[in-house]
Each structure stands twice: as C-alpha cells, then as structure tokens.
Length: 295
Length: 227
Image 1 (cartoon, rainbow over the protein chains, first blue to last red):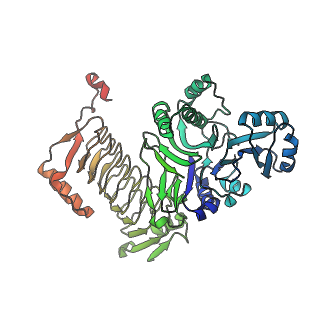
Image 2: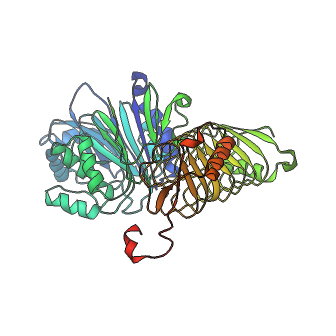
Image 3: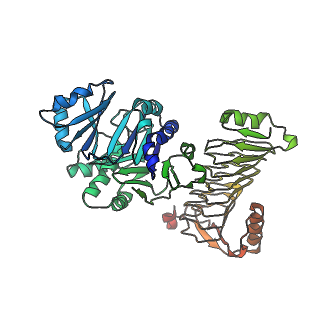
C-alpha cells in the first residue's frame, strides 16, 4: 500500500501556499505508507536556469562551499538546507552528473529540470515534511507520495517521485508484474536505470515514449497496452498534472476540483481539510481514462 | 445522545458508544458530525438506531450492519455496507468500489453512481443504485437483487450464481455466463417494490433482467473458453 497526493493551484494565492495545502495531505497519507515520502514541486521562476535537486546522506552538508568546490569544472550556484541542495546551472544533466561523481560522490542527483524540485527520503512522511520544510514551498503544482515498500528496498533513491529526463516525474500506488521485461526492453535502447524499483520502469517508459515524439496521452495509451499490473499513476510535467488508473481500477484515487484548485489523493480524508472542499466537484477516476490539468 | 462529533471523539470511541451505550428500546436517532472521510464508521451495528452521517465517509462505513438505518449525506469510500445482514444503508452521494460486497440481507441504496464491483459476491441483500455502476458489478453474486437505474459498465454479472440484476440504462457488456432474460410480472413487481423502498421513481417497464445462464455451474470441456 502507498499513498499519492497531488495539488494543482489555479490561483496565485494558492500558488503562494502550495506547500501548506499539501503537507496535511502527505501527513494524512502517512497511514498508507510510513516508510518513505517524497514531493516534486513545479514553479515558474524568472531566472530560467536548469535546476538540479541534490541529496546528501550527511544531514548538515556544507552547501555554501559547493559552488566554489565545483567552480573550475561547473559554473553553478547552490542553495541548500540540511541534506537537500538545489544546484542552478546551464550545464546538461550528464555534465553535472559527471562532475558530481568525480568531486562529490556522496551527493545523489535527485532530479533535473527548469521548474521541478524533488525532495525524497526515508522516514515517516510527517517527519520528512518537517525536515524539508514542505510548508514553505511555493509553486503551480506538485505531486507527492507516501511509501510502504512491497517490492524493493527502502532507501531514499527507491522513494517516489521517480524522475526521467527533465521536468518529468511520476508517483505510483500499486505494483507492476512485468517491470523486469520493460526494463530489459529499455536497457536495450540504451536507457539507464538507477534502481530495481518497478515504478522506475514505467517512469522511464513514458519519458522514452515522449522523447520519441508521443504526446503524454499517446505514451499512456502505449503504457496501457504494455505495462502489466496494478497502478494509480500521478505524473507531473512542466505544465501538467496527469492521473490514470489501471484497467481494473484496483488502486484508489479521488479528485476534488474547484474553481481554485484540483486536489488528488488516494482517499477522500486526505482532502477533507482543503478550503471549499464542501462545494468541490468530487469524483473517482475511471479505469484507463486519462485525466490531465494544464497550467 | 443526539449527536456525536467525530472532531471530538475517535472512531474507536464512536463505534464503542454505538455498540455498548445505546438504549436499543428507544430506537434513537443520532446525528454524526465531521466524518471527513474517516474509515470504519458505524461498523458492526446490531441495534435499531437511525444514524445520519453528515458528510463524506471513508472505507467500510456501516459494514456488517444489522437492524440499523444508516444514511450518509455525502459520498463513501470502498466497501460501504460490506457484509450487510439487515437494516438499510443509504448513500446520498456516490459510492466507491465494492458497495454492498458480500451482503447477506438488508438493503443498500446509493442515490448517485456506484463504482466498480458493486454488489460483488452479494449473498442475499438488495442494492439499488440511482446512477451508473462500474465494471464487474455483481461479480460472482450468489443471491439478492441489484437494481441499476443508470448504465452498467463492462463485465456486468460475470460468473453470476443466483442473484438477479435489473438495469434501466445501457449495459456496456455482460460478463461470462450472464445473460439478458425477459422481464416477467414477478420481475416488474420486484423492481417496483425495490424502487419504492429506495424512494426512486423510474418506469419499471424500462428495466432489463440479467441472470445467470448457469453454464458454468459444471465443468464442460466444450465451453472451456468461458472459464
């Protein structure tokens, strides 16, 4: 069992308080998954640099010195708090990865993009929300996850959201039965994996299809045909949040939409605190239907 | 005890009060406030109490119900009134999956839509849905009646035993061994009676009857594709 949450803010005031809206959702869904949690937040920023989210095993990593340390090989700025850093640079993901690998092998690259920051770690979702100060996050939309691992290790890297490419992430409640064959297929195309987790396979599958020219809808139609298993998937891209359930609708999801926001959760009780929820249009997504909201 | 506020007491305390501290002879009526999607509300009741749950409820609300009349003024999560034995459970909004699952008796009314697997393995209860039902509804249903005033998604009545399904709208595909049959006078009367109990007003002549073709009761190698 896992929990998924998502929030899509339609108003500027909700964008300013995105984190505060979503923290009670994540904490509530700690009941469905208490071993790890994660959040991907999308925000349009004026500077337009590429953003790389970094994870350090060391709680008080010296982020202030990192930009200078990397300076000779990578022009960048770094903002950091505790064990999470955000590196701003125009370099490509491959270049950043190579420099980090050589100079700071203990730092893990969580995500790449121009709008997306990713936070994920092991521990109770309430503790993680506090550790990374999710309350203070701003942005247009976010997807989050609480994990109760059933098929691969409990580590920060195995936590959701999973990412592939730039500004693309996915959280998953369910289990996939053919992720090994998907992985073999994608590895044959030169796509590299970071973990043995089933969700990573569908995440990289979808990003591969979109890189090949499919729309997100086209990629998901292919996934319906090729991905076997149970899933509710919530996908975040630079300008969208997309929700699908498997053909049997085995894993839950509830959507609440108002004129101000779209909120998505595994269960209604995770949405119960939201403003105007009493008047929201509440519905349960159907099997193999694609629900998408665009910024 | 005229009202119980779930913002002030836990689900465990709430259920304990309903199980142990009601004067059953008084047939009390209780308002339940702030359900906020909580799970397992009013499970295992065995008293003639009337509960009005003011808001949305979570999973298993009014599960195993006996005697009680429970109304949810909102939506419900998975498995509302699962294993209901008697009494009535009414949902004013929509119901998530497995509404009335394994119900032995009593009546479940969903005024809105019910999601997939509505009435799965029902064993004698009646279910009336004002809107549509999702896929695989009445899967392996053994006894009882499912009335659907709207449409039914694919796989309706798959592997049915002796439960009977009545659908007013479109059936988007029957499950294995389910078949449409002519409506007899007894069917019209049954649907009329159930709609009246549910407080719904639809022309009974518009309903279709779906029941088991009973071809899967015994192994038949010529029909192995059905299994």
